[in-house]
Image 1: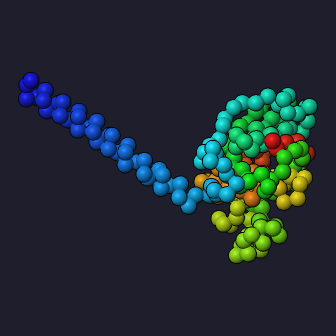
Image 2: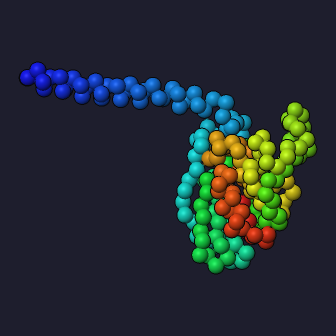
Length: 202
């Protein structure tokens, strides 16, 4: 083997070895990134993966009789929100955060009753009971506001589809009952949905 060829092989082995070493070093970092995340162990079974959304296109006909005023389907299992306009010309699919446990949410049919830009956030009585250190109100526009930049208020008291400033929450069990979206996604949905848009949580 010539000296030049030997140097080339050694360089290739070094690069390959360095790549493997970097990949191995990345594993503990990924594991550490889950520590202190918004995913809570309570209420999440061992089979639930962190930050997992399933992106399957669905047909509105399987869930709604019609798309009058538009239709929003929140699939809490796949952690995804589907939206169809009334004329079905627009279909959107967004990853979401979902409630920490089944006890913290509702399933069934409701509708959008109000649209709010920069919504203020007030914890419910049960939230304050669990977290007495939480403030009584966080004003809209605050970076600490859990509702993000926009919110769609639902027919059920205290239930919202809203944005979040904490992007780690999306794709995880992380909310106290609401469905959360990236701020850019709630802004897009906010522009398409209207008061009266049908909502189904499954």
